[in-house]
Image (cartoon, rainbow, N blue to C red):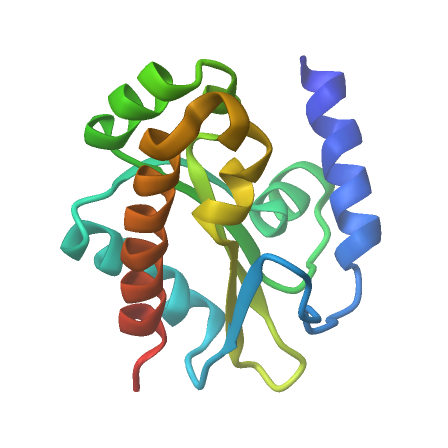
Length: 158
């Protein structure tokens, strides 16, 4: 397990050794903010509480690189957010879709010391399961799209 963690960190460090802003991608929302990396990370956690989402996971190659390898790299944190009120209907609609929970948001440090917030929209994340999940999964994804939009706007606001 430890070797897997080190290998994963090495890949992340290689991918993020220099600061590079995240480009737009299909199904992604990316918001450049005026907040620092630390401030935006804290604001995402606060916005998650406001939106009644639980922090299911939080991982940072920045912290791992410093702690395990003694290297300093630009800030990046992946925060997994979800809640049982979404998990139950999601699983009732499609057990396979369960692999996509929690929905992740990504906080990255920009070259100008500001930070960006990125995430894949829940409707994009759950798109491969819509045939089996039907209207129930589509409705859930649409509801989550609105919640993640509100969370991102709140976290990014000045």
